[in-house]
Length: 386
Ligand SMILES: [Mg+2]
Image (cartoon, rainbow, N blue to C red):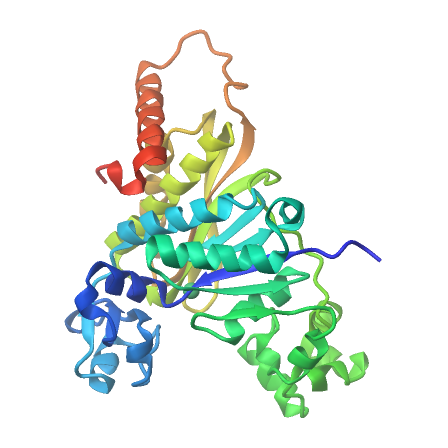
């Protein structure tokens, strides 16, 4: 038997809305709805739990949200502030492990197998992280702990908000069997309907069905989905140390059409990736934008540099150009936007040309200075103009 792994999945509760309530205590206990204005056919990005009681949820048109919850307080998305807090949350994670795989601004997997001798059991580490996020930042996180990523993510969601759930080899069957099949990764709406049509509603029922009866609905995914149904998942936490690429992506609660909002998200991602590249002493040859439309169609757009780089300015200039080119030709509301840097080499390893580019050197010094300030004073201390 292989060594048990200790995976934590940490997911902030109603993140954008909670940040708004944190920054304006007058909003505490009130129905807060973050998103685009109803007059501009905006959509809900996040709703506080008070607003959810009225049936408001993300991805809903804002006009509908304000009809359901007329006293709700509608606020715009403040991406920079969310990124800043996200970095602080990440800093708390990094006190306990360097095996961190960020999934989005408010969600990450942590592998703490190597940390338990120093900090106690996975449960103790999970409790400390949750406590420190609350004490230091005033925000609540839900924590899931399990032997693997699939179960850890499931666990963090089971008792949201402010949840803390541990799934073990012993209790996993009991927890999994009663859950709806839609909780399994890879079972989308179409597959769910197909399975329901043959009488399979829960994970337990799915497991008790002979695989040959599932082939029509699941095709070549049958084996993988059945493994998940049994709570088996071998995927590693991909921290930046083993990554062949460094990326940041975000699934929006609602499809976003607004060019400037998307550019704002992209800028945050470029800044994050650039910082992580520099921290890991990498330079990237290639950048890739991942764009997923509302109908799940996903496209990528890449661009390769003649010389690897990790300066924010160079990465941003290129990312922006790639984005605008895509936007001009094939713009559409996006449900996911991601930015990745790949073709990683060790910093300075590509330094072969005779002449240094003075502009690049200047940007490097700027980045070093801003990284230093950010490390000391937090991310909002340095702002970069569009
Ligand atoms: Mg969350």
